Image (cartoon, rainbow, N blue to C red; front, top):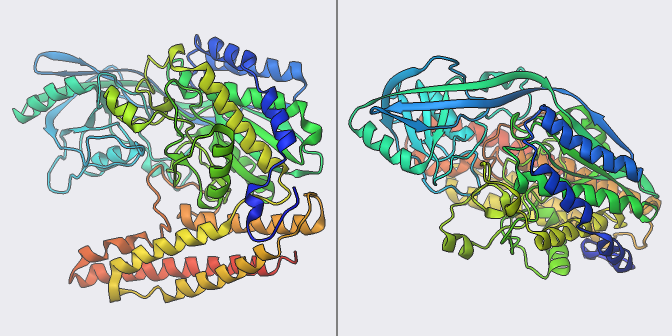
Length: 593
C-alpha cells in the first residue's frame, strides 16, 4: 500500500479492510427501514416524518452510534390543494411548494400559451426557462410545458403574468418546489420569493388547455398551501476516526419526502443507516471520522436542512471536511448504470476507479447540477454523487419514459406511485457497497485522493471555449498565465507527495491541508458567484460562472453599450479567477511536504 509519486494516491486502497467492510453490508436492517417508511408520508416537520426519524434514532441508539438530533427553525411550504377550471371543465392540478396561495378564492384571467424552450425534461429540471420577451403576458395566466421549476417560474414572474400553469410531460403530475431561494431566505434572497400562484397539470390535460388558450379562453385556478416557519429535524451521527479524527467525510441525504417517497429517498436513508452500523463496527480501523446527516426540508424548503447545517457548521466544514457525499435514490429497480453521475473534476479519477472496481460498471460522470443538497459549493467542498445508479437511456426510451430527477430514472419520481415496488433489493445491496467502498477509501487514504490537475484541465477547456467566443474582443492572457503557473506548482507538489500509510504524520497532514485549501479556493470560483458561506440561487451555475457571459459575445454585434458592459464583467471575472489561481499556487508552494 506504499504511495508512489505523481497522482497515484488517488487509487489508494486497503483491500483487506475494504473487503471486510463490504462483506458486513447486509440488507436486513435497511430493507426493514424501507418497508417501514413505505407507510409514512414524510412532509417536512410533520409527525410522520418525526416517526421516521425516531426509527433511525432507535437503531443508532441500540448500536451505540453517537448521534444528535437538531431541530432548527426553517421556512417550509407544504402544498395542500389546487384546481384549474376552463371551458366548462375542471382539471386535476397540483401546486408546488412556495407558490403563492390563493386560499379559498380563485383567480381568473386570459389563458395564453407560450411554448417552453424545451418540452423534453433533461436532468436539470430546475432552470430551463421560457422565452417571454416577444409577448405581453402582463395580467394573463401563462401556460407552458415542463415542470414548475425555478427558472420557468422566475421567467413568468418577471414577465408580469398573473399566474403560471405548467404542463408535465406524462400522465402523472410531479410534486416540486418553485422558488430559486436556496434554503431559508436571507436579506439578499427574500426578494426572489415567488409572487404568483403556480400549478401543474398532466400532459393530456395540458393539450386541452393549449387548445382552449388558442381560442382565447379564460381560465380560473386556485392554490392552497401551508407556508411558514416551523421546526424541522436534522439528525447527525458521528463515527470518530482513530488517527486524525478532526478530519471527516460528510455523507448525507434527505429524509423528508413527497408522499411515501421510497426511491426518493427512503432507499438512501436506509443506505446511510446501514453504513452507520457497519462503519461503527469498524471504527477502530478508520483513520478519519465519518459524519452522517439526514436532512429535513429538502423537498419543502429548497434544501433547508442542509443549508442550515452549512450555515451553522460552516467554519467546521471549512477547516476539517475532506469531502461531501450525497446519497439520493440508490437501490431503484432497473438502475443498472452509473450514468449521469455527479462528480467534481478533481474526484473523477477516484470515482471512476472505485465504481469500476466495486461494481464492474464504468461510470459516465458529469458536472454536478445546482441541486441535490449541494449546499456547500461556496465553502468549497470536494463533492461526488448526487443521484445514484440509474436505468440505461436505451431502457428508458424503450419504456417511453422521460427524464426525471431521481428514483433511478423511474417516472414515479415525486408522485404518489413512488412506492415499495420502486426499490430493488439486489440493486440496493450493490449501491450500498459502492457507497461504503467510496467512503472507506477517502476516510482511510493517507493522502486526500483528489487530483487538482483535473480541475485545472477543466478550467483550461472552459477558458478555450470563452476565448473562441470572444475572438479579439477580450484577452484572457492573465488567466492563462496564472493557470500555467498553478499547473507547474501542482506538478512539483504531486511529484513530492509523501510516501507512507500514516495520515497523522506531519508531512502527510501538510499535504492534506494543502489539498483542502485547493478545494476551498478552486471550487467556489467554478461553482459559485456568491461570497463564501452564502448560497447561489437554484439555477444553473455554468463553469467559471463569472466569465461564462463571454459565450454571449457573438450576439453583441455592434452594440457599443452591451459590448462595454460585457467587457467590464469579463475584466472583473478574470481578476477573481487569476487572483484565486495565484492563491492556490501560493498554497501549494508553501506546503513543505
